[in-house]
Length: 232
Length: 373
Image (tube, rainbow over all chains, first blue to last red; front, side):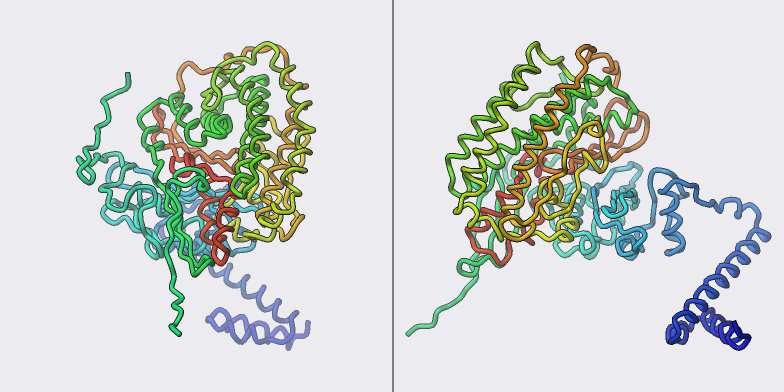
């Protein structure tokens, strides 16, 4: 590599770090362009490591909480999400599920489906659960037909503000799944194009699968029989 | 001369209609004979399966799973007990595994026979239905011989099965298979390659692969679109890895890949594969062994949750179970294959003629008990 080229690459990397990617993408020579890009990635990593090291020095207690993922696929996926969408995880890494915050869910979901190395093209199961203490949770079991790997995503919301972005347009089965979860738990899916009850009548009161659900007295003048206490 | 008004008309099919295979209502918007929009309305058979599960012990749930998919009750039992056993990390004796596979495959044949026969009936062919029901009866007789019930068995329990196979079961099963195999050829002659039947099903309701996956369509419906995906192979459970069988996929034999005829024919091919599995399982099954040996005294899974999938005649049956360590499940969610199959109907049926809707709906092989739960 000539010194002239090296100089050019260094210049472009600096531009890239400043956020100017257009001039890099405009390079005609493919070899040169990939060299610049790899250099840029290296520089970014170094900068991040330096920042982490600085954070460690300034607050040693907090840095010990920074956990690297183990070999378990679930932790790797969670780490990838955290890298792509900073501050989106709501819990530490574990082997069974990925707990995320509701706000960025739509973006994360579309990325999970489109990212070639993940390619979660199938929403296997979606359900809600009543955690008690005023909390509800939506759970998504995703599966990739191509790579044959799976994850479970959990999103907890409080009852007073039970809103989660809808992923109905990403996985079409989400349409009916989300309607059922709304029907049974009263979690609202923002952006759903057909947000109605699924199994129960439109004018039913309450959300039956919540633990504190009480059956309404009458429905259109028909008295609803109460469940017998205990089983004989 | 007056002006002809082309207005859209809303037509209700069901909830009480023989070709909806249960209590399903279809809100159909038609422009003359062409369907412009179709909305399935479900919930007429909702029996609060999931709410009931939260009020009873794990083993009391099993009879309820029977009643969800009443045409493949064994397969539903199987799916549920596999999920609970996985949660408890329970290992069941080999003989039990063999019995379960035998029952599940017999059930697959019975369920497919009914699906195919009724499909013929929807299209207007009456005779194949009678032939298939006649042969299904012999399978139900075998179930009755084993556990006393013909439709809703409560046969598979967590850790075992309710009864050992009766004396003479293996011989009866072999006799049935010897009788049954040539019958498949007869069905093919009667229905599969019938010109009218092909005209009514080939090239109708084509389901592309990506749409099928996005809608979570599974089982024979997915395989008919050319996706080689079978949980018995791809995410193997029980002892399916011991058997040699093919995963049948559609090939557009009479029209386009993923049309109604393909969905029909994949089921026919699967019956043959089930016969293959049955012959192997019946021959290899250990003679002795106590089927109650591994039954736990108290079913008390550890705290945690599981999502477990099995392959029923209708597709991927998933059970999501959340346990808090008590003998009563906190949450049981049943992800039913017929539910996802029905959800694609709106996408499939748009643009087809009114008479094709019956063809398309029949080819999806839905059971309303499982959709509404």
